[in-house]
Length: 546
Image (cartoon, rainbow, N blue to C red):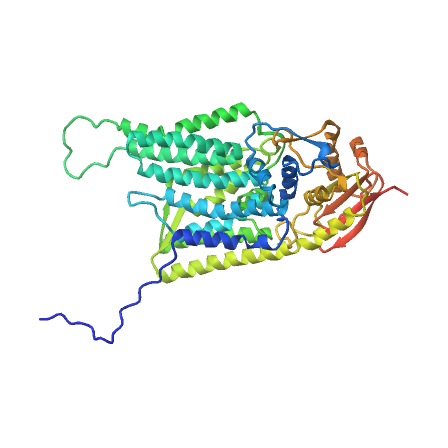
C-alpha cells in the first residue's frame, strides 16, 4: 500500500527559533552592560578616581604640579599592579576619564565572557564543551560589590583568571599524550605569573580552579570501576591506575609551586591590623556582594531569584553540578568565614572570598527544564531582573552630576597651593536602615582628589597603602593618613570640643562630604560650617572658632 503524502497546501511544522551563536550572545550582553558608562565622565566607582590620580602620577602627567611634589614613584614587585601597568600607557592618547571607561568596559564585558567560558569548561565532558544560556546570568555579577567599590586590580585579575582557567581546562580536556600534558604544565606558568602580578586574588582563583580539576580527575582515576553483573571471577587484583593519577595531578603542579614561591617571596598583603567582629548581617551583606546594586536590597533579591530558579529546575527538570567548580565554591565560602575581617594587610580579604562564592553560582550549577514554556518564562523573569538592575544603575549614575558640581564649586573657593584635607562623613541618619537605602552613591574623598589633581588648585591627601602600590608619600606627608583617620573618627562623634591629633595642623582647611545630611557640626580646628547642600550630599568647611 503506498505511503500517504501530505497535500501540497499543508505547511511543515515550524522549527524552534534558533538563538544566535554563544559568542554573539555574550558580546551583545557585554555591550548592554557597558551602557552606564555613556552617562558619566569619570565612572563613580568609589576608589576609581583615586586610582586614576595614581595613574596620572605614574604617567608623568602631573610633573611640576604642587600635587606631584608630595608623592614619589617607587616601583616594587607586589601582586597588585594590574592597572598600574596597563593604564599609564593609555594616558598618552586618552584622557584619564576615557582611560577609566576603557578599563571598566573591559572588566565588565570580559567578566561575562570569562565566566561563560569557564562554565563551558567546567561542564565539559566526552561530548565536548556544553553551552547553556544560564551562563549569561554572569551578567548579574559583572557590576559586583568589588567593582562598584573600585577594587580595580582585584576585578581585572579575577576577570583574566576566568579566561585563563576556562581556556586551560578546555585544552586539558583534549590533552591525551604526555607531550600535550607537559605543554599544559608549561602554559600554566606564564598565565599564573601574569595573574599574580595583576592581583593576588586572580592568581588564587586560577590556582584553585586548576587544582580542583586535578583533584576531581585524580579521584576518578583512582576510584575502581563498578563491578560487572554476574558471579565474581577469580584473578589477580586490579592495579591502581598510577599513570592516569599522575596525568591528572602533574599538569597544574608547577604553576601551583611557582605561585606559592612568589607569595612567600613578596611578603606583602599578609593578614594583619585591626580586625572587626563578623556579624550575621555583615556576613549576608558580603555574601550578596556578588550581586550588589543600588539599593542593597536589589542585590539580595537577585541572589534569592537565582536560588529560586535552581530549586525550581531541580523539581521540574534537573541541575547539573560541576564537581571541580563546587569544590572551589565551597573553599571560597569556608575561607570567607574563617579569615578575619581585617582592615589592613589583605584588606577585607574575606569579603572577596564570599563575593567569589556568589559569583561562581552562575557556572557551577547548570539548570534545565523539561517544559520549554517554563524555560522561556524563567528566561523572561531573569531578563526583567537584569533590566531592572541596569535601569536603577542608570538612574543612580545620572545623579552624579550635582555632586560633582558641588565639589567643584567648593574647591574653587580655595586658594591655589593651600593644604586641604577632604574626608567622608558616613554618619547614618537616625532611623534609616542600612539595608534599604536610596539611590545616592557613596561619596568620599576620592572624587575631590581627582578634581584637585586636574585643576592643581590645592594639595589633598591621596589614599595610599605603603608597600602595596608603586607610589609613596614623601616623608613630610606620612602624617596625613593618620590625620584623615582622626578626622573620620571625630566627624562620626557628636558635636563638641574634643582633643584632635596634632597632625591636623598640617592642613589649612578641612572639607567634609557625606552621603547623609544629618551629621552634626564637629569642632575641627575651629567651627565646621555647612557651605553647600544638595539632595543626598552636604559639604562643610572649617572656619576659625569665634
